[in-house]
Length: 280
Image 1 (cartoon, rainbow, N blue to C red):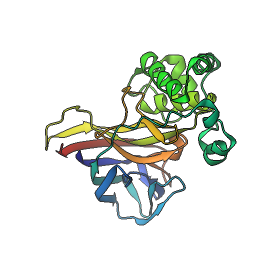
Image 2 (image 1 turned 45 degrees about the vertical axis):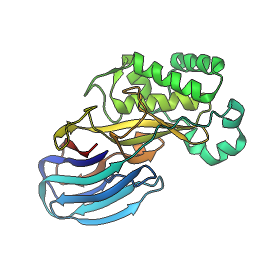
Image 3 (image 1 turned 120 degrees about the vertical axis):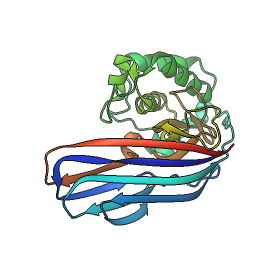
Image 4 (image 1 turned 135 degrees about the horizontal axis):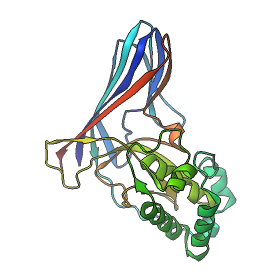
């Protein structure tokens, strides 16, 4: 599917910000199954910029504003051709996934942090699932179903600093929480898992040329001899409607926009995402 994405975000300050220093991760990745035909990042007010690729392979736009400004806006636009096939994995055994060489290669995707660690009650359920699953892939798919079935998607119910355990306690959250929670559960039983951020065209059968209001989205990948993706929010495998922007261990590695500013006490963030299918 050929998609156009326009992502507008930024901050409105309570007063005048005198300086701001920021990083944007809003440019889609070029991968084997996703070709970026065009990408552009515009910043207002005019800023000093620098672009680099971070440790995880994500394109990062650094920028600094050194003049008084009541508002800072970033608009990222891209045209992406997504031809993502279904990936089922190699059906690795538990012994193969827990091999010391796998740990050496993928240890960053096996270590837990307070942001993704599941509570003891959930961890026990996942360990029971792992104990009766013939393969790690079977376990991972059942864990995704568990999170999808027992968590309710409630927009605005959590924030970027909400821990996975807190979202589970309330049985509600957004895609970030469900992805962090899934990652923590998989790592708890020795399955390497990765956080992916990007966009999802909300219409399953979109009208060509019609803009749809969307938002940033998140899903996961786990290791099964190859990376297998799954979207726990929707209980589907990422396909032609998913556009990948960034990868990392958890949300903290991939925020679309973050930074610091001086000159005023507070700010509020705004976000708008528009996705258009240009070709099926």
